[in-house]
Amino acid sequence: MKHHTFKVIDAHTAGEPLRVIVSGLPEIGGRSILEKRRILSTRFDWIRTALMWEPRGHADMYGCIVTEKATPDGDHGILFLHNEGYSTMCGHGIIGVVKVLIEEGLTDRGGDGNERILKLDTPAGRVTATARMDEDRVDSVAFENVVSFVDELDCTVDVPGLGEVRYDLAFGGAYYAFCQAADFDLPLNPDGFRQSIDLGTRIKQAIMKKGPIHHPVSEDLGFLYGTIFVGEPGNPAHHSRNICVFADGEVDRSPTGTGVSARIALHHARGEIGLSETIVIESILGTTFEVEAVREASLCDQNGVIPRVTGKAFITGKAEFQIDPLDPLGHGFILR
Image (spheres, rainbow, N blue to C red):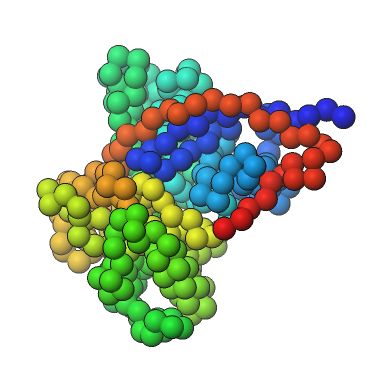
């Protein structure tokens, strides 16, 4: 019986892993990226579990698949994978996959020169990424995200064992609940890793029980992806620090590209940050993304902004994985 073989290129963006699957994929089909996402989740989920979970991955692994474009002027489609399922957008993933596509010669798009621009179709919509080149090396990647907006401000939810918890709800390609770390005496560094998972998961579950979230365009985008705790930065020259707990208790090592997009929408809505004002947000590791609100925009009846997020990624390795059809654990397993 023949083994199934996948080739991947691994990278990290500000510490958060990204496994780009470059060969071994079946024909996914589907006209839109959201349709491709549904097909992947219903017919080919074994690919996600085999390459994200153990023994080839781990509970906090993250990945992506590059597909054909879904719009006439697009360059590529992108699908995102994690321990629980399929993201609707991923900022660290955009930065990482652009690094891989260009440096590994996997795209003939984007032009040449000191800047290369890729128009990427994601489940949440069009994302335009600009790679800033240093000769043949991608030094950094900036992307203009989908319309990011505030859904609710100054909300409360009763969380078992915690009582009444304050949060804001905002969308930056995915929905996040934003809480203040000081409300929980949560350290925003690796010492708070386990506590953040416990708190973030409990808060997320409580908010989900309040009722559904309604995205203005697609019900596929209307779900709470994670909880983000916000507090003081480690470096006083920076604006603030995030810890993001998403999917099934997964902790983002980066500042979270979609998370800082939603945060800039929050700050703009509160009148705290103006257009074209760049702030630097740290991760649990102290790594950083720059983010600014480029312009105001709306999505149906939701007023928001177009964020621009900038960060750096690094390629860490290449691998060929095999799935033995006789291996009872070939499609992966996960322990937390």
